Image 1: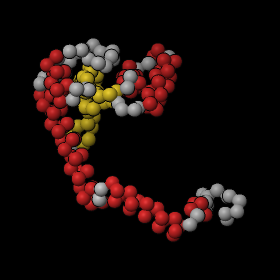
Image 2: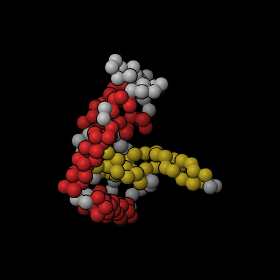
Image 3: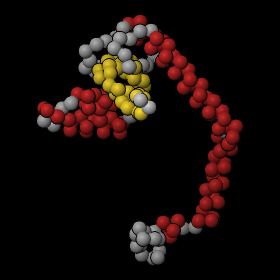
Image 4: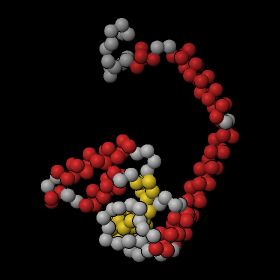
Length: 182
């Protein structure tokens, strides 16, 4: 099974791991990231441990503006002197430029099937927690029609009580003097 994301990498994920991850989510891909910093506790203090890592990534939905920003950043890196072209700084922007987003970093030199089980558990938790939170919000605030009606009612109350908001926004020492408001 071939990776869909074309990033320069020195290693490829094992077939059985890639197949297992795609059974959980068909859109994901795994790339060798190289050295990456991970938060850790040492002697009771928060620190960063640098080690080998793999990255599970997925296509980024409608990331047009982010892709443009990544393209600008890549052009900036290309114009930089050779001694300033750090591949570790270019790689995240290259990932975004190609239309992908990071999902999960895996601190490991070699991948085994435990990664698939961890990803399956994280995916299940994410999907079910979102559903649970959505149900709680609907129970608390009502469904869409009720929520839209409540929002419209609040807008009317704000309009009636606040009047012209610019009068209040432009006052004070940081306010801008606008003719006819002060």
